[in-house]
Length: 86
Image: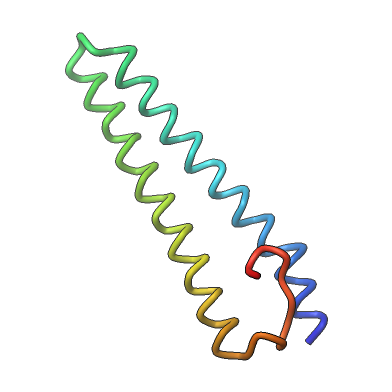
């Protein structure tokens, strides 16, 4: 089971961190566009869309974290070790 722990620690977790960072950046980009283009309704709607999809992306990432934690608890706490999911 050491291989599974290494795969999660060195491959899966960094990918999840990267996707989470991208979702947060996309959300902040939407907030920036929403505030910067306060007078233009079309660009405000575009910024609001970015905000919405950024929040959806962040929620999906946290669901993935929860799903991985549920699987880890189902398999057993000592089945593998993960630096993030402890």
